[in-house]
Amino acid sequence: MPTPARTSRTEIVNAARSIVEASGVDGLTMQRVATTVGVKAPSLYKHVRNRDALVRLVVEDVARELTTTLDAAVGSGEPTADLRSLAEALRAFAHANPGVYGLLFAQVPTDARPDRDQLARTSAAVLRTTTALAGPDLALEAARTVVAWAHGFISMELAGAFRLGGDLDRAYAFGIERLGAALVQATPGPAE
Amino acid sequence: MPTPARTSRTEIVNAARSIVEASGVDGLTMQRVATTVGVKAPSLYKHVRNRDALVRLVVEDVARELTTTLDAAVGSGEPTADLRSLAEALRAFAHANPGVYGLLFAQVPTDARPDRDQLARTSAAVLRTTTALAGPDLALEAARTVVAWAHGFISMELAGAFRLGGDLDRAYAFGIERLGAALVQATPGPAE
DNA sequence: ACCTGAACACCGTTCAAGT
DNA sequence: ACCTGAACACCGTTCAAGT
Image (cartoon, rainbow over all chains, first blue to last red):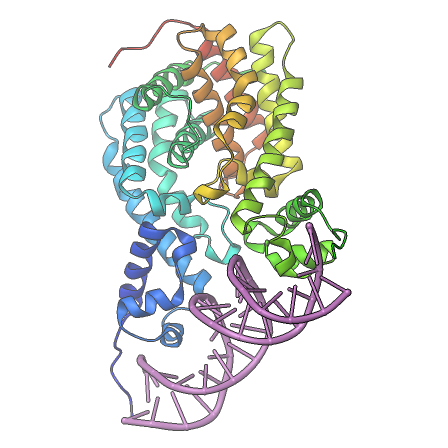
């Protein structure tokens, strides 16, 4: 005789995400998710394959949200302004979701990684902006330079790696200005 | 009656480092370290306080090695060349030690973080180079921009986050050239 | 002074048994 | 069709007992 489900995949993913946000990935245990949604741990396996799969669902949820945020940040018609806006939007998103942000580019088990399509969707706004800024031939490399810098800055900031004082807001703004200026000169670098 | 030690802190740290290198931090278990050095797990607690302290010893070991590597990379007398050399040395170090590199700037438990002094020693060569490149007033911000970019690029590369094809060596070289050029213009950006 | 076995409180995951 | 208790193989860590 079938019984109605007492929880759902969505509810489980939401619970997992807030646990990661509050306690980091290491704090994410199946038992804790279970008590949060009101069942026992073994029941979770009716809704998700295992813990890695659950982590992946959380990452994809965060990636989708970030995509929306970045898409909304562009469209000023001025590539340099869009670049600044993208960088600020990414940092604001990370500050608002410091726990799960770290998961986005983390060295996480293969089963916990989001699929290629979602990644492509998330990078679309950046690629459009660097295409306008540096031209189609250099767009990909320019995008990688910007994203590497922004993500590196933010992850070091969140990890507490900037310990030599100074104003981090100003350092971030400094980086955007210099990078924007460096990428707008569309002359290709040395071939080698 | 005292018995001679059957292992040592150094041996334990070395074992832990190679386990992290082979299997990631999650693969680092006290049991595995113990069998590697030839004792039972409880014995390890005579040499290290706990697992977090052991992780920290590994991180500090790696940081010391990286410091030596970066110090050896500079000294050409030409700041732009030193910057390129530093960036390449950091990436080569990460490729040679992909497992433990991720630990260096990771969001790791507080007890597992290296102390401030070691971090200062590791950044010294970069700061010297950016001082020569961008002047003392902008040296710290320039250093943060370079390190953020390089670390972001490398960590994304190691995490497999660059999935849109293209030549990563070329993308890294592109980033160095543009950053070097951007930082050498010592005009401060807008104050705001 | 170091090492060990036994024990405790936790994990993730499986599975038979309930409804 | 979902939920549960019991069980298994693992963790990190403590501690009394060995030498």
